[in-house]
Length: 318
Image (tube, rainbow, N blue to C red; front, side):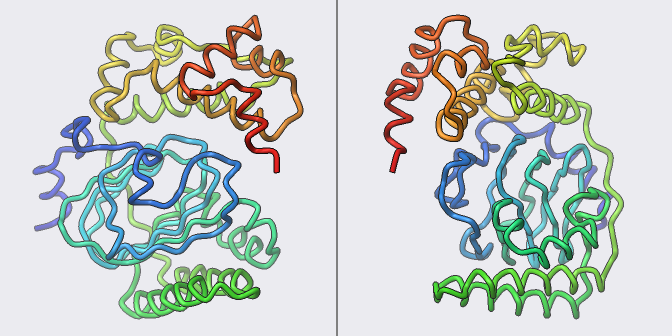
């Protein structure tokens, strides 16, 4: 059965998902040992897909880690930005933190590996950064998905297994060794250099993509001289030129959460980042995310986090 046949059976995949089938990447820490909070201390993680099989998930923007996803077995539909790829052959993907990604399983089996690493890890190794920039693996979405030859699959699998051993060893030189293996993985991937053409994305997922893109654009650059511009369902829907009820229905269908919940969670996440990575006053932070009065910001934060912004900030002072 070919790709087109599968896509007929699973028409764009995402239109068939509901809240029982798809999860936010941040909501499955038992599956993927990561969080989207920027203050966590880890810099690199290596995971075996055979023992940590990916469920169906959708991950909005603003992860703070890069991801190399190496798939040797399993069938699924992967979406990178607005491009959708049907994956049934060995494939490696190089994912930038700002990309919206999703995965829909079409088979029970799963094998391969993936590596997650923070921007500060990449910045700490000039040769690794140079190799990634030379091949444009993370910066050019058209080169982020590579179909692999059998020879490259064998070589890359061996390199990932060596990375698992290094990570488990935990020696002082482990990080140095891991980045060297990643350079070799990138170089070996380029030997195949076969970039599959994306399939057509559904209208629904196109709206979904643009919502998260807009949410990220609105929140990632806020400060007390440039506070949040839009923050209601209607304002987001107007910018996307769709009805608020339709936008709410799409988000609920594909993520299990409505628009207001996504906006609220994103503002809470940005609040945490500002509390821990700046010395701004609570008044400045509250104003930046849309509260004219600091007490209202503190009430909002405590209602959903359980402690006040000041208590949260103090709890992370080492």
